[in-house]
Every structure is written in structure tokens, then in C-alpha cells.
View 1 (tube, protein in one colour):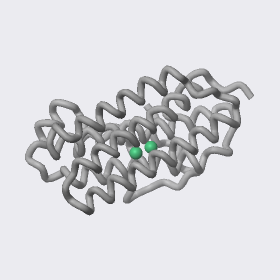
View 2: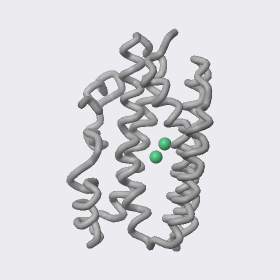
View 3: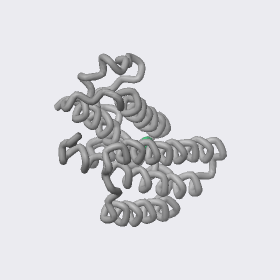
Length: 186
Ligand SMILES: [Fe+2]
Ligand SMILES: [Fe+2]
């Protein structure tokens, strides 16, 4: 089965980016003082390692190799973000984590669309679940900062926040997997 080049690249990138996210959350969990937040962020780290495993399992089914370039790049990025969490205060790690998660949501729905284009539906549920999980992550981080006085400024500067999600998923009115085709359409 020949997969689209864009899909292959999305898979390789997601595999490596999940590692960057997991590293980043190690620093984030380590740098917050609140014990609950520590636990919650550590759970998100575990979610990201699980995503990485799941993405790899899909790649292996199509003999897609891991990209050494992405592995290196995202390793460095993850470690830098992880270390920076200790020096940039409380608000920014939550803000940029939420912003990043918001963008990641559609990566998984786009993969699903690509697979569906070539008639493959076996990964629908998994990709849907991963997209929804990223949305839950986004909502978690947003909930923590939504009343913070810095949010309006950051929302203006970095164009993500309460009013500007990077995806059209609403967890309170979720579509089931078979009706989720309208998610992340441009
Ligand atoms: Fe993830
Ligand atoms: Fe995530």
C-alpha cells in the first residue's frame, strides 16, 4: 500500500514530536510547586509516550522508518523547553503547552483524513482517540490559565487562547468517530 508522502511525513514528525512533548512535560512537572499539578502534568507526559508508541505501531505496519533528522531535532527542542520551564515562571509553560496541544489536535485528524482518502479505516478509532486526547490536554492547560491576567496579552501576541483555538473540536458536544469527518477541515 502506497501512502501519501504528506501522510508519511506527518507520521514521522508526530512520532518524534511526541518525544519532544514528553521531555517538555518532564521539565514542566518538575518545575511546578503544586503537588496536584505535578501529578496531572506527569500523567500528560505518560499520554505522550503512549501516543509515540501508537504512532510507531502504525508506521511499522507500512514499513515507514523513523526519521533520524526529526528524532534529533525534537530531542533538542524537548530538552530546551524542559529546561526553560524552570526559569520562565509559572504562566508561560501552561500557555505554550496549551497552544502546542491545540495545534496537535488536528495532526491526528488530518492523518485520519489521509488514510480515509486511500480507503483505509483501520486506524480511525486510534487516530480519533489521540486527537481527542490532545484536545483534553489543551483544555486542561487552558483551564489553568483562563482567568490569569496575562492571558489577554498573550492571546493577542501569540493568537491562541480562550477565543482562538486551532481546531474546531468541542468536548462538550463531541461527534463520534464515524461522524468526526468535519473536524479539522480547512
Ligand atoms: Fe500526544
Ligand atoms: Fe498532548
